[in-house]
Image (tube, rainbow, N blue to C red):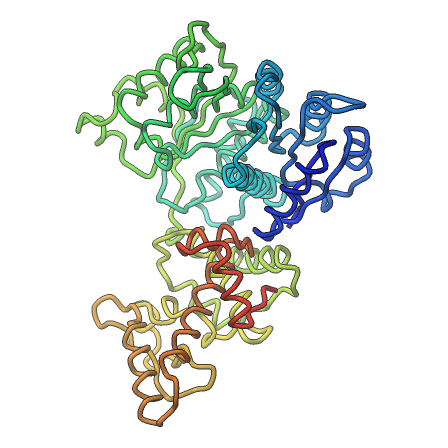
Length: 493
């Protein structure tokens, strides 16, 4: 994990933040002045750069605003938190205009400060993942005719700024298409900003899109730029546009029509020099008929439509994508890439993948962590793959898959005759009965620890080893996942 940099000439402030962040298992690096921080920034390799920077504004030998300006020239996506006394509020506003993530007034409430830093860290991780996706996967993979049609369409649109609507099932890779359209467009040197309109509460979405002025609502302590301003000169990707609230659709239509918008609480029009790419898994024509989506906005977005095929419609690409994701997962985890047998590949290709490419990627992360050997065999595949109806149809006797126990007990999970999915609850019950019948002691703790181990490792595989995000997805505390990993002797590769 990259470090959090603290820049402040006040030793007590540095000490308090260092200790509080250490308790959260967040590494820090501290500087007493701007000069040393800038020198470290210039001389640090990419792996040593900060994930979040916290800086005071007024210090001997330089201004925090100067540091903010120079940091954003090299690391425009780095969240910078500015610390300031209440009397420095004007400076804080200047900091926001210079691109600061948030300001932290002194004296500050320590729990709230840590919460703010963690928010900034999550934002940094999202930006890093997005940038890695853009750099590591500059082109989409696919040899199937349906994907070749998509590639040809991207090529034809390469020199255009026209609005594009991407349709396709969830997990089919709509954001990758949007990134490719941006990369090959005249706006490639500008920012690519993505927002999932379905993932943000309605009350916050307007501010996220258009920004807000200081005092626009309770908690708006300063002016904040929205996604339209952040994407100035580049591309704004509006994912799940079909779920946008109806009243916000009107505001979006106005921006697309005349290229101007107003921040929440603002009175001055802001020009939007942005190309909009939208995506949805829904049938927008039906949404229009149902009165849930504006017909005029639909026609404004539906200038060029690209339909992305589901993974089951391009099965020929599954082996190629599987090997790609296994190598990508190994690279992220710093381990040797695992190989996969032809039989295992054939079994994977039979699966319908309701979660599409995203589901295949997650399965490859799981295999990288959980497969016991360097060569992945059919028996190593997750239960939903080898127990799928297609797999059961193609093989009369699918291999058994042991459950929860480190040593085979003879019990296997049986597929549901209707859905073909594995009843892991039945497997757990069988395992418990086997241990109880054998007179094993402490059965409760034995099985509980095994379940917890699988849950934690699955979450870490899903989040590429990021503990904080894994804990959030599991619904447990950050300290809890660390303590459990120590108790269970779990190591992340």
